[in-house]
Amino acid sequence: MDTPHVARASASIRAPAARVWEALVTPEIVKRYMFGATVVSSFEEGGSITWKGEWQGKAYEDKGTILRVEPQTLLRYTHYSPLSGLPDAPESYHTVTVALSQRAGQTHVTLTQDNNPTEQAREHSERNWKAMLDGLKKVLEA
Image 1 (spheres, rainbow, N blue to C red):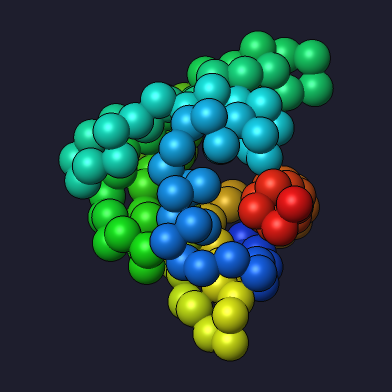
Image 2 (image 1 turned 90 degrees about the vertical axis):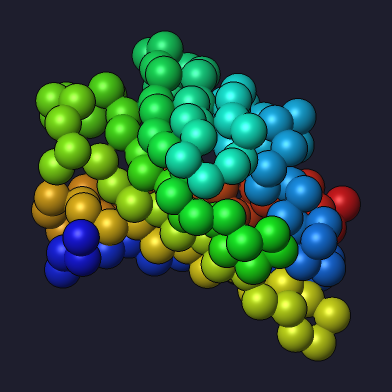
């Protein structure tokens, strides 16, 4: 489901792809860079994924389904947040794709999120994903 409002963010991290991958799928590490969110998932295709936390003073529980797992290369999942104000229906879900590629001692992380309803929503998502990737970089390069 590709719309013109696709959010994109990327970062180059001085760490091997195996270490970046571990940080993407290990809940204790995710909590350190993803705004304190608690993630629960087996990270197996077809499995569920949930994120719980507080955002701007509001408790939330987001959810989705793991669509594709290629260790050290690709993670794709759906994402729905009740804080969006949209109904819990298929058209309200985003597909988030996190792709890893290793070059010259760094891992390049590229993230896309589709189905943003407006340009403003796309920009908001990009800012959030950029902040998340900056946090991931900081955790892994510390």
